[in-house]
Amino acid sequence: MPHSNPVKELAWDEEVLLKLGRDYDINGREIKNMIKTAHALAEAAEQTLGEEHLSKVKLINDRWHAKAEENSKQTVSEQKHQCTSIGRSPGEI
Image: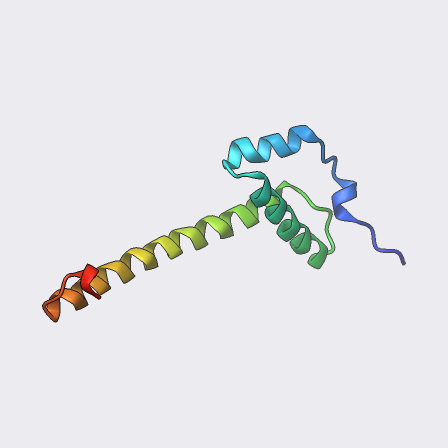
């Protein structure tokens, strides 16, 4: 049984890509990566690629970026605390 390509089954025209860039505020590289990941999700579920797959990828990306930002701030705060506890400014290390 031949496997169909979910990307080809969905009408991907310029308007869909513009909507992704506009609604999700992402650039072309991010759109490409998002579509590839959504395609993999759809393929694994043996489904036609749809908006729900793109939304799921966007949600996962947003959560990851929020967590990375939180960890980054926490790391900077910990570094400042370590520096001040040994009597140095962060720039001296």
